[in-house]
Length: 441
Image (cartoon, rainbow, N blue to C red; front, side, top):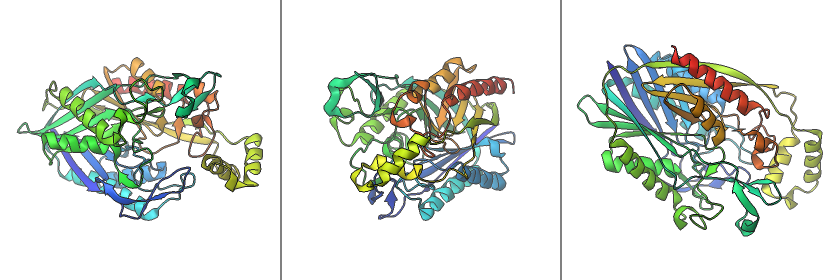
């Protein structure tokens, strides 16, 4: 009645390839800390298919995601809108398929990443066999912190300088600590794989970013394989982590990286492994046919453009680029480019999927935690999970409090914050309408 298949594909670039630096020049990679993978899970109930793919990369362009999904659909027959491809958002993955600030795209690396996602998905579909699934949920509050801090002057700053801790008042939000787990068993009752949803920025290597790494999602994957067997598969999908990272800026738990260690990915991965093991102890897998349904619709959002003041500022910076910091150079470089060929409208795909007792909301951006919590709270489903950076990216989807501030995530940019300030509210409303529709499919 239910068949599930898995596959994974190694997408680790060779030593010497570039790691996206964003505002800083790209870094040339040393030997990798573990593999970067594209991992796929294919589901089938009486000929109705669904494919989920988790890719160890920062993000990918919407056009790339569409091409990946269409190629998978053409090969497997699974409809386009029943295929979701998500980026884990590791900041130590290979170069992106688009210009990321001062870091250029790498067509060779992007091609391997795309091929890996496609190959893993097609192979997973070929590997379909009888299975059972079960879900569980818990919480993990040790490692995630809001990175946007209100200061004594009323301003909001992302990742403020620790030297000015006396100026910090409070974070603007509380992380979503939920950990949602789906376990897939073979017909014989052996664990075949896990799908894990948890919200945190995989940017935990901090200043030691010279090697490719899947960050804590990779450490979680390795930890679960040690517990349940090297032949299992682990898909990680990030929750709403746009404003969440692993640094406790207010110093309530540590003065530096999580646990005072510069190897935070391994510490977080080990802790998450124990959390998933604990959740899994209460999961009961069922081989009866789960409901599978999918609805995908584009919400048209208005695009933000640079202002005359932004352009004037960029012209001043350009007079002596070398004397300014990397972030200023990156913004100024973009602001001096023409916007003539940039559409004023952004088709923003909201992809809702029903898989058993999970309602998945896939959103193609970095989503602020409060946006995700609003969707979860009002959802008609008991178990609603949100996958950010699903099927591409349109930068940050921030809250109004951020748009009204001068925080980094509010600054207009084609790769940073390109949607209008009402986008978060509109996405919440559209996602909830779509979930209601999904409920009745």
